[in-house]
Image (tube, rainbow over all chains, first blue to last red):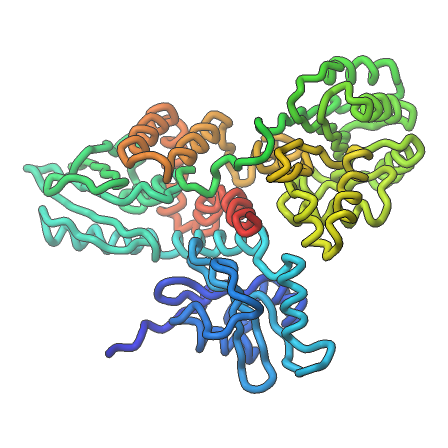
Length: 243
Length: 297
């Protein structure tokens, strides 16, 4: 048995091993009385956010639902003590678990959490909206570029220490990338291989530049194979030569 | 973009909505004849049969009340009479007095159009003006909340009302020109479409057209088109087809990618994380739009 790696707060996210936790802007402002752009770490003192992190960082689905199960749209119930109730939704395709709503549990009373959650579901206002996703993607992009240059250089150094052997690592926190370096007389050949799937062209430019920021796109050559193996489906391989 | 997030959306409409942006040259317009001439040149009265959105950007011009009326009134009346086919009119202006004046004109002449206060405002947030009742406005908001394309039964669910009442509500908006009705088989039910939401989805459109870069350098239109073509292949085509598409894109856009890469290289060398993040997020809004619209489907 080993415990899962600790989660990390980064801007609006709590980054877990396989997905991240976030709070919708509507929930932040209307339910938690916080600014819609509040960082996760600043919101973490709230009991329901604490419960979100402790209960959902390894298991994105709870045992109880709010209303009937609705396939991928199912809203799950989150509880902390007798009073605090939240509604969470796991957006598996985007790898994010949202705290969508919060309210105190006051059984039988008009302002009880559950009638409120049902009302939000009925009106369609419980789910995250475009602004939530824009903030999510912007935060991810930020995270990517914050660590990308250093990750790329570490991987490149490893490949230089293991000439002719492909070294694989995650760069920018999200991109599994293979690097292989060969030295032919005075020339060093670097091969970089990564998946083309779900890739913006800006990502490709960023990845290549992270390895050799003094070179530009035209210095890279697109290949159909690594010297050591053929490419897997959706993989792309670039090579650069320099003396 | 290569990922699915930027695929042009499917819609009940047979074709993407055609955006027809027009911005009168920056000038003072006391001359109504000049306005009439420009208007007729820009919007010749021919129905294409295709759904379209007219976008008139008033910012930058100075219009007398008479020239404003000359510009908007005949156009809105012609749209209402069906001269252009299924068409929505959006007037873009950030001037409060102009907005107030246009609202009065719309109400007095029973016109239907929309006002947007900024070229950066999403089209689906343009405000309807004219003879809308509070219930009409509420229903239109529900249609937009439902993704901009709904059936009457979907409206009934969203509003928590009886199906017949929902039919009445959307029919009222169609009659007044705020929604477009798409006839479909009885089993599917007719669709009611907010043309602005549809234009936004099918054209990746902003009211101003591609005039303002979101980051410090432009994305040429042919690059954007290439990106969309590749995105459309992703997930639906074998890997080798995707690779061919990427290779073709790369060859055609080599100059653009070269320019980008030099800029990105400079940012990395200088540790300019802020601009690197801006570059990486160049398509964040489009990705967000797609992700949120998937929830509504």
